[in-house]
Image 1 (tube, rainbow, N blue to C red):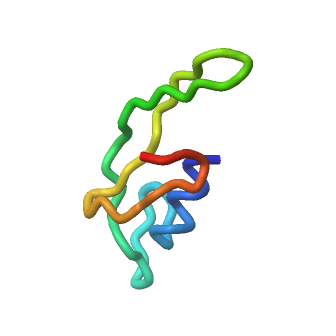
Image 2: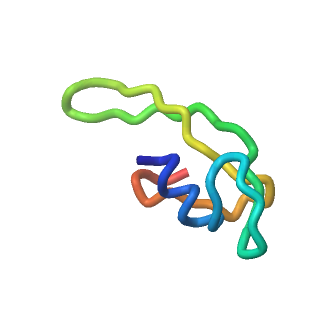
Length: 59
């Protein structure tokens, strides 16, 4: 879900080169999310410019 959200924000998928591209992928950062079922460890995607923000959780 996070990957799809980043692809939509950047306007391109992994490895794609398009004229409509809005940024570049830049790996992941670790994030822990505490829920009723316990603590989840996530790898949240990021972009080089730092503009991508997921709506799933706060950074």
